[in-house]
Length: 320
Image 1 (cartoon, helix red, strand yellow):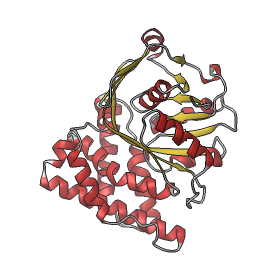
Image 2 (cartoon, one colour):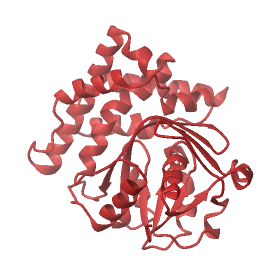
Image 3 (cartoon, rainbow, N blue to C red):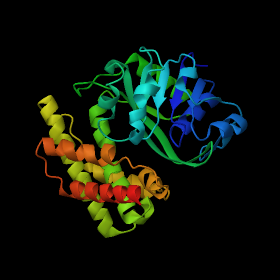
């Protein structure tokens, strides 16, 4: 059993799933909840998973982080649209506490570094199909790997740190596939190669991953978007490092397309948020990469168009 104690900030499709896995494996886990608090206190957490269903009848549930005991690791699994809540939420924890963000997009760590020590920040990039389908009810459809890296203010490779190894050991014990990366910058951009086209187009086209993959014209559009993301990442990486050794290979596109073709039909997190009338992570997933491209003069016309389309739909939905 791990000696580390965890707090989950955001007990939804991601935080609820990984937090439940950690508790199932014997870790001490404390969950921050909002609307689900009463239900989870009475009924616990339910996880339907392709690797086996399970229920946690009793969990440590809270509505206020100041009521939580000291922990070693705070896992931030809120949507990036809720990051304005983090100054208050994170202030409840000791300044030596490791902050592990499981959020999507670009610029996440720099935002969190406004409120906590940068060298305390880790990021987990989640490659998982998981949805919250009801109060305290998570449905895990496919995959589940976390790519874990340490934040560097200079966006240079930081290496594999001791906290990363310790947390990875807990995740492995909890049957969460985990891989360590010494270069979080390039790992973030590698994930955006998939997230930008599939999250954005799922909203614009009202389509699942399977529906998009079934249309050859759409597949070509997706590959064009992926190329723009890779070119931006590689130009940025070369500017930061002075050489091209951090480049994402163009062959990564074929790898991702084959991976998505094998994926079970999936409604992306951005499309689910749109369907449910919630705020979309437009800026983190689309806006920030487009602005990063503009700063280095990279031409990304397809990314810009998709960003404006999704932003327009999100604003229209918010005003309706």
